[in-house]
Length: 105
Image (tube, rainbow, N blue to C red; front, side, top):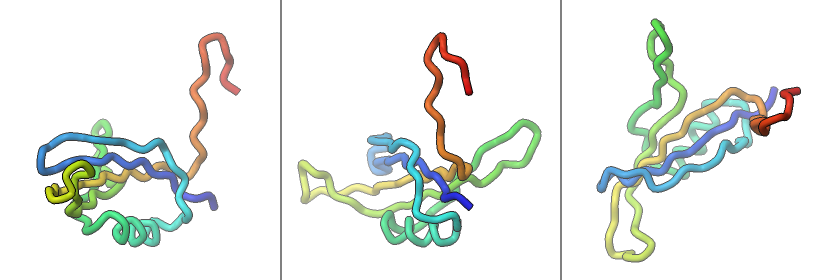
């Protein structure tokens, strides 16, 4: 089986704004439980799940929200609550979007 893929969104929860996102990244594992434990060790406690709504279906959990206290790089004496929203994607390598005039394989 192939490894899971994730995307990270970094949020300053104290000031309520998004300050960064990662590209889609391949993880080291195909096991969601193992991935969760590794992410929790890096990003802090899990405070919620990430859900997606699909037409007429119940919401589906597609990731987790982790929270920890972090310090501003330019003012290390000040801290804020950092949330990292992790979305888990299907275990397939993402494809590059086609350019105009190119056919999809």
